[in-house]
Image (cartoon, rainbow, N blue to C red; front, side, top):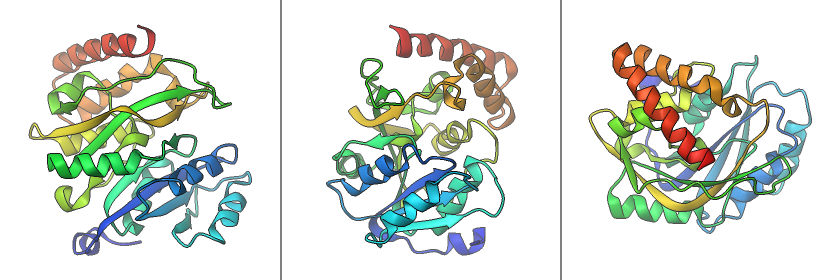
Length: 262
């Protein structure tokens, strides 16, 4: 594994997008996810998959796709380690100036990367995200489009976890070295806060760029526990006072209700 020191010295390949996909028992959706990357109008990418000791056919399906596609790279964890460790290993292996995150049960629309790279250049931005369409296990639309604001800063993200991981593209020439904290849930939210410190701004494509799959029982579907996750990250990782964190969580709950039910 590449050390932090060697990664700090690493020269990223200009304009290359490294697409990071953590994999764990993803046989139902992994082919769709990978094919949605291969179908992008922006074709200067590599796909970095890290398998976290899957016990299904995920690896076999990936190997089939790899045979005819040299841009697909597969790495395997020796022990089951969780999404944060898998994403961080992928960041170690990634060569691109840009990194984009895609969960193995989500998929992209074909112009996702081209739109976001263009916006990133036009705004001289370091982080671009976007809106989603939510689908069920069968790919059927289950709710109306979830539009995001044109931009968000650190204070805004404290009150609204609006950045969906599978919509994010980051310019590492602007952020430098970063890694996700090794926590079971919410490591993505903690990372966006970390990168937005100092009141920096992330910009968004308002039209949906990602089909986000809602699977009952998944970590992200347990909305009743999310406010505790948000509270703990703000207090333990961002040093926010408990009183302010409770207020932020109240705002988060209000925004979540608006987002999912109104």
